Amino acid sequence: MIRHLLKLVWNRKRANGLIILEIFLSFLVVFVVLALGVSYWIDWHTPVGYRTDRVWYLSLSSGEGDEWVAGQAPVLERLLDELAGLDEVEAATRASGLPLDGSVSVYAVDAEDGKTLYAEVVRASPGYRGVFGIDLVAGRWFEEADLGLERAPAVIDVDLAREAFGAEDPLGRDLPFENSRVVGVVAEFRKDGALQTPEHDEFLFLLHRPTDPGTVLTKFALRLRPGVTAAFEETLVAHARAIAPGWNLEVQDLDALRRSKLKLRAAPLVAAMVVAVFLLAMVALGLIGVMWQNVAQRTREIGLRRAVGAWRGAVHRQILLELLLMTTIGLGLGTLTVAQLPLVELWDFLTPRVFLLGLTASVALIYALAVLCGLYPSWMATRVRPAEALHYE
Image (cartoon, rainbow, N blue to C red; front, top):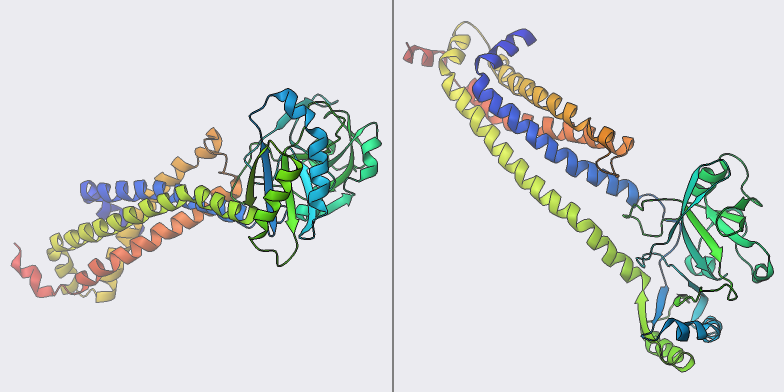
């Protein structure tokens, strides 16, 4: 049966070659879009390691020089204490980097075994965990008593713990990052949000100590108490201006910031999906037209088959199987092509899991499209009467 279908397809290789090429190109586009969608879906369902509800950011900026900013360190410390004492504020912190703020500070250091360790580093006050609801996996978070320690206390995520210490217990171990020592481990921390894939996943929190040179932190984060409304922004700004005059202030709602980041990040996927839908619609119309023409040109052949006793179901199945065979050839060529992508590491999001899921979904979609496009032409073939073959010499 397969040999006979291959012969039929080969005998019409020019027209069928165009169908195979169309399926091949469609598969490439569909694979890229679906693989990207699968990557987004996996990222969306992977916990980010923090909460965004009821969190506001207060960012301070100044047009003054570095010397003036350095002299404001006591003022900023007082501002943090005052903000934490407000009735509407549940917890407060200041840090060098906050979730979704767009800041990046990646360190690369050489470990004792010669391996290079990468980590995104954030300096934070002890209130950071309370503001963002970070869950500890092991150990503890920073405490005020840690400010007097000789070694800087560090909290790392499970990715950095695995990279630096393997299966060993990281608690109490020294890190080559600025003479620090691990006091706690948190779950995977994805500072850039659900749909962001940072270059290096490892994460390191260092306790901010006001005595450290060159570390004046001007980003504040507040966890508000339930029921606090947007009207509190005016009170917050007025309070901050009274304590820290001369600074430019900006207030952001982390939930609103997260939504805007998601829209911005999802825009390329939405655009690609729109293009893919239009492409598949054109491919579907093309396949229906080509198969309809194919059936019209084979009226004599189909009529003779019907005349010698072929039943309608057999004719219907033959037309569909021919289309599925051409689809299989196109998908085979497409699969061989996309299989090269993980080897050349063209896209970071194309992990083995994403590749397999994207490939499976793409193949299933193209097969489903081919079957749908072949239903009407194959039904038309079953309507050919044996007597119609007599009209042809």
